Image (cartoon, rainbow, N blue to C red; front, side, top):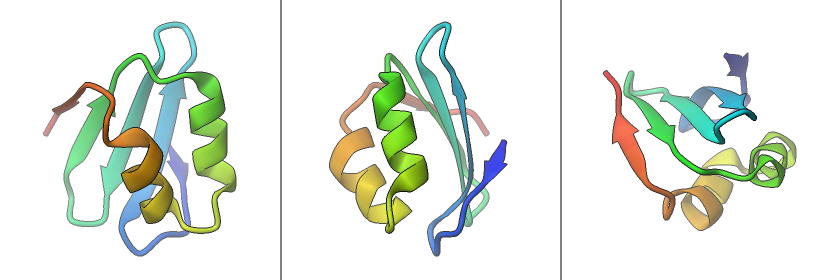
Length: 67
């Protein structure tokens, strides 16, 4: 997992082989988002507000809470 500076997100990871984006939140929950293009992951890493980017570009992908 890659730690990120955010008030909402704690760390992220991405598997380019299957497009799975994993996000660990500061509240302890961890979610997997599926079929996420790599450019979305790269955009998240470079976004000035990770939480806003997540809300705007990632929340609409299929997901599952994994913890």
